[in-house]
Image 1 (cartoon, rainbow, N blue to C red):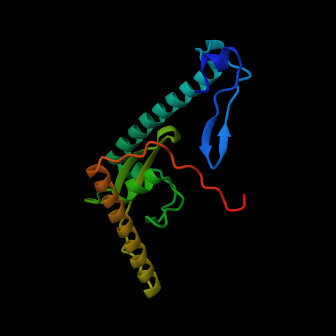
Image 2 (image 1 turned 90 degrees about the horizontal axis):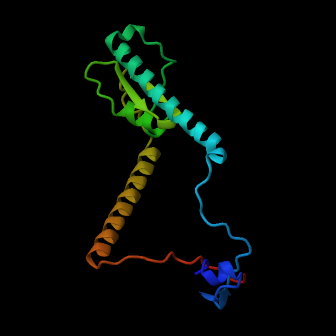
Image 3 (image 1 turned 60 degrees about the horizontal axis):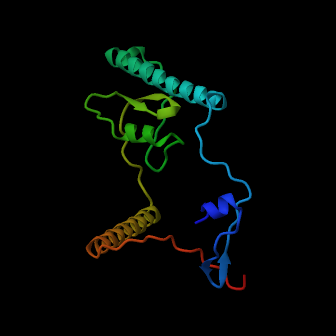
Length: 185
């Protein structure tokens, strides 16, 4: 309703819309530029940067896959940084795909070398040496884990129940919930 010919060409105010709580909203366009295809001169630098990033990521993937194949053929030649001990709750600030790959690696014959595509950040090779047993937890940690698990379980059941009801009654929310105003504001 904002970009009607009357408001764009004649620069008139739009019709007032009731936003609730006795508030009316109207708009006025003071300057309008229609959508257009940008000339190459304006987007050249952005296109060049994006293309360089894409090509760089492709080269990193290719080089990483080649190193992974070479290191799998002869693991003794693998040059990797110092080993880290990671878990799901102590991931040493590593990206999530690396942690997922390390914890999901097949350790049929250790060590396991796994390649991880990180998209624009490049390619990583993970060397999983061994799986350590879980550390012994205190009674407080066990209780905290049980409470957290029950909260997750309850949340999952509630969401599943909500989705079943929504599907059964074919309900949908078409308008976002308006922001609530604080009392006295």
